[in-house]
Length: 203
Image (cartoon, rainbow, N blue to C red; front, side, top):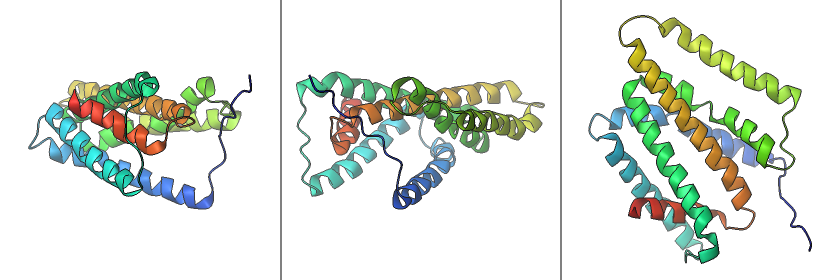
């Protein structure tokens, strides 16, 4: 039996620019969630976010002629991604409700750190190195420095609970990204985006 090659190339300059753009949009996500929570409860906003994402990504996939027909052998992996998407969105919304937008953003942007940790165990060629370990320590240290001045005063416990929930959300997002890297070797990217969103919105 011939083992299938695992694709794990270094990104090109254009891909790096695109990733930086996407990350910059994610940075505004917590602020958007905080504003949205003034008019919607966390679970309803999670559902609306799923439906909107399904419409946008599904529409792009339709324009490119990508088949969205569900295949039975893909169902377990798609269900797992759908569950992770739902848990990530719900914990993000609930956590942001209990903390400030700035603290939520700081905690949520830890997800690349968790991607590095998960990649060490599940992604071939993505092993931890001294440089990556130093980056992880710097990330956690930076988060502590940013949050330390706000660890006293009114509402500290509530904010800390929110921070922990948002950090859990970041961990769930990182796990989903890691699994997506594994699954995309056999499932077309648009299908990985649309079908889990469709399953989640239906449930």
